[in-house]
Image 1 (cartoon, rainbow, N blue to C red):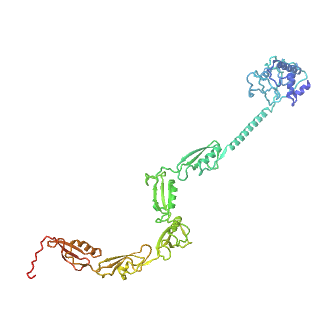
Image 2: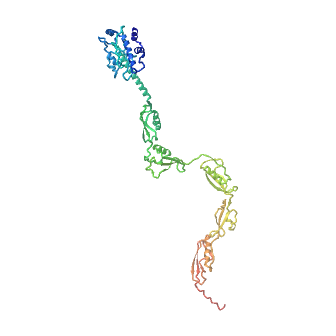
Image 3: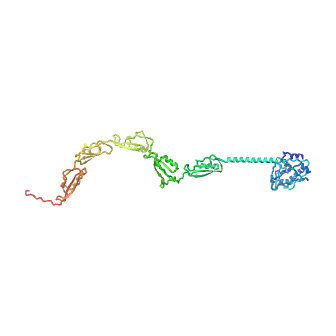
Length: 550
């Protein structure tokens, strides 16, 4: 028994060995204490025998040698009921704060039996009590047969650890400090890992900000407004500064440009006083995206000046023009100048068609002129304004000379009679005769081509006029009036403006005969007038008596 007490009182006692002593070979260390009533009775009986051998019969001895057992004067345990309630709780374990200063002997190796639900519960106490056991054992109350009834414990008295409260306070303080430190560390780690650095989205597309928000679990809230400074979809401002931190799940508000207001009425400036560059700057400034600036070459308007404007819709005017309307503005590029990189070929003695084809292919303006040539066939090229091998620019001008064949010199027809004029070779001479008061008969009045002129090609016609002298009127008395029209036409057709007038008179001459003329058998002036009397033939001719001598 002494060895057993020493083993029980040692600080390094083995809880498993003590449990085997109490439970015996059939202990319920790994089984449900309520699974078998016989096993529970056997365990209680073993514990009662051990305690009977250990506890003396004298109550005084129990009180002195077993301070853990609190006995009364008659040797009865004063805390038997209290220990029973702790060993087999019926409903709820007592609160720690309501326990008295005296504590029961509870070691880390002691397992308590549960209530009808069969659950085990372990309790750890900070107070360590060392029992003092005497040599003489005392009898203890036998364990009840009912496994749910608490085994009566021997009388004992409790010795309180004076440092218990201090240790308990220190322990709770350490636990509280550890909890706070771990909480602070966890919060710090969560705060650091939950923060995102805000990018500077001003000036970039909102789609890029949305992608960033999805990747970092940031809600992007977009507020759109019209703007002339930024294109549609460009971020204008943000409610969080760039490079600042924002928690995941937060909202980042972005002001995004909607571009210019397309329905705003625009006042058009005076384009005639603006250059091309100024028109472009105006278009960019007001964001008139539907304005197209077309530049075209002009030989009359200087480079950079306004030519005209056109609206794409007939309903649009300068007073109701908006950004949504189409507008074409034409500005001058000045006279077009091309690089001189076209080599001119040699066209001499080539047909005109070859030069025309080359000019059309290279955008050259071709001009032609003609000149006689004694050796080159008429129609072929005899010369060109730009020498062969020289370089010209597109839309340049090139003049070529075409051969008219050999030339024919026009003679002075004053020295040639009208009969010989018709026989001059290589000339188509037309001879005309006209009355003249200044040029004698047969003399040359004029020629259509001056003497000494060289005629080339097919057109070598020359008209010469010879003089008929002054107009002369014959004696037409006795002639029929039917000859008057032709007779006087010869005067007028050959340059003499001789007019006449017919008067019909009574007469015995045959009807229609010319009986009188105001002018006849004489030279007339170029503008003279002649009176002609014509007989009606209404009188009887007078009887002429013959003389006696005849």
